[in-house]
Length: 381
Ligand code: ZN
Ligand code: ZN
Image 1 (spheres, rainbow, N blue to C red):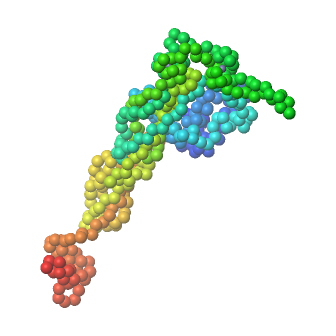
Image 2: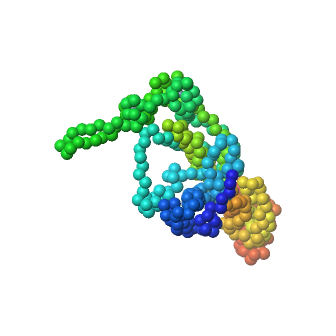
Image 3: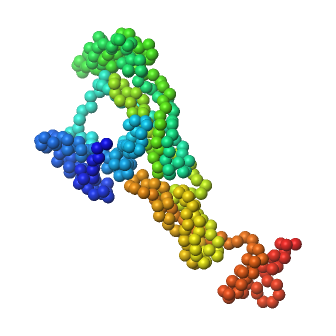
């Protein structure tokens, strides 16, 4: 895939803020709009600016672009399903887009409702539940779902093979009929969808036997999906063209996979940062040294300094989840919990008493057997 540097197209740095990007886009899109700029390459330039903005203004698309070099994400890595897209938003990215700006600058474009115009099919949503580790490392999987597909017999025309739809005789192919009525205010014209062709402008004389003229059939669709490493609970991925068939030759809609990530018994996660709690002995905390710590990448050694207090947090760089935005992994944060032993054997008890004595801590008290011994005697009986 051709790599374009969206940042240099907009003339901003890689760490530009959303406001900087928006500002750069506003400036450039005004400068290069083909209605204003008559240079021969203005239109191409304008398109490029819009493409760059569309990607960089959407946090998830931008993250994808930063990671994979493409707004559609994973381009090379995805494979299989063909035309799989990146991480999208249902709300279309929010903020202001191309249409908003130019309806302000240029008075907007009229939308003509042409019933016979190609229309994209409906988008579909699929919820996928992942194990904690699957979300971190990604996985390949196959999903199955029902959708409306283009009829394979008539290729969506609805007409019997060998025949084709003809122009509707009732409306002349316009898809609507105009009726005139006399009212006290004068003659009123009203437009109605053509009852014969239902707005398509085409009449099917001989219907396709497979779909009955609908042009679509219900199918059980199987799709191979590559879950990207580092996906998080609630995030979604857009798979272009995997939704339902369009009308009048329009493209398929998209499939949105919404991810749910199950909790882990060992770890918690916030974005690319993973948190873990690790028990350590009182002696290790006091003397310092190496401890074994669980990470999603396997156990690692962590050196704790002498005099470590309970609740202290250490950072294991790069031992977290992969970042969707940018390269590498996040960190793991290890919080140590110094454990007071619940039972002591004889040897430990002697050692601790000696320790207490050396610390000037008079556990034994004055005269006779001490509290520990009394307790022990009580339990041993
Ligand atoms: Zn058909
Ligand atoms: Zn008609």
